Length: 236
Image 1: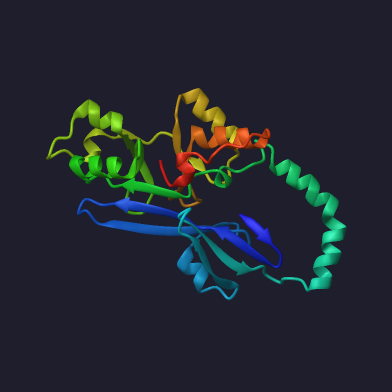
Image 2: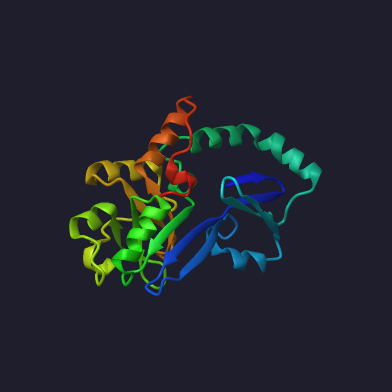
């Protein structure tokens, strides 16, 4: 999230889910700093604080713009800035620490998911066409129930009558969007996991964190200039 008083610029997260009938549904959300929870974009559009949307076609990313509640006047904003400048500097430095940075700030914002009943040929096309090494498996509500990868396909073969549920690995671990990067790194290292679904307070997938996302964040924080990982460019 990028904040420019007196309004917010909220990153739009998109979950796309491939169903058994071949249809793909999209679920777009943002994290609302006023309500301190994930909300759907269409819910934001109906809010009185809503300003508009902007999209970057090249980066395939979007922002939702909305006013802060009880936004101060220009003079009040200046006074508040002068009074809290030192505190904000401290908070900014604190937010740059791995134990204080939420995974929502570095996760992939656009996530491809599939349902359990998707056929294996359809799954193979999804993985190959999208360049994904693996995708989360979700239920009708968008809650993760497992994960399936190219390795699973190679191990079991692309049988015409096979379904995702026949080869997927049941979901054991997820991350909540407000959990820290350090906790995520510790979990991934301890369990030998390279990617984890990120969920909101209702357990619905809103992002995906990979080990490359963590490494990219660490490299940038230590002064290195590196290109964004594929996961940040809409790859799982």
